Image 1 (cartoon, rainbow, N blue to C red):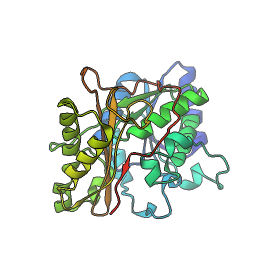
Image 2 (cartoon, rainbow, N blue to C red; image 1 turned 90 degrees about the horizontal axis):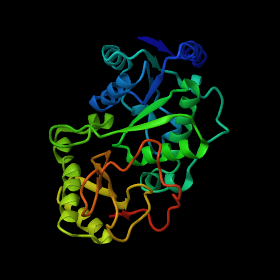
Image 3 (cartoon, rainbow, N blue to C red; image 1 turned 60 degrees about the horizontal axis):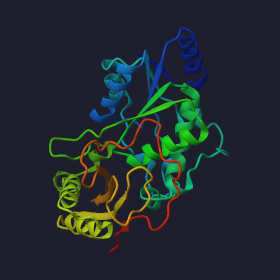
Length: 311
């Protein structure tokens, strides 16, 4: 595995391989890799001749109250994992490589990016969309791989690709979970042992949502209220957002009459955990409604950003 920090050197190497007809898959990450990331890598490895993994902790997606310096990092460990997994190239630029001068160009999806997590973290998704666009321009992959744990991010990137006619096929890969159901996340390392035990309330709430809908509850506001109360049974859990949305557009819904996504942002101690589940009300079947590079064209968001919970 070769490691690059220079944009020009990586581009030159990949240009030569593309001229030979080799296909390129990209897995963008912020590092501190876990089994969820490695599932993305395995999918990319199976579907492409060349796999590029980027590790870049992107300052543009951190707000002023968020401590960028404390985001977990271990490049040596990550590189060893990627080498063992058969990755061809690791792209690990510094901030000075990606942003040699202050950015004047920003990619923003204000409707989709201002809802849910974007309502809690203003500007976050503009930072995500901007860095992903830049990575797509640098690597020029045929395919790129993202985890469905960050459901809103996947919807935004697919809409961005569609809107800007970016020639990249975006593949979403199901969430990888621990044995007790907690979604794997680099931020889980922040949880103390007691907080880690309490965190299981998050996937349990998603299971509760599926149970309630299966029993016939279709009123979205009532469902949000019941799920909020369910989370609050755990003393260490503070629900920030409990939202029932249209699974394709993220638009608010009054009733569960189409596939929905239940999106949760729950604070355990100082750590915010994100998770989601796509639920079909009565028809059952395939819950994976995020299709490769397919998002409905009318993504205008109306109404309130789900149930915000304040104390």
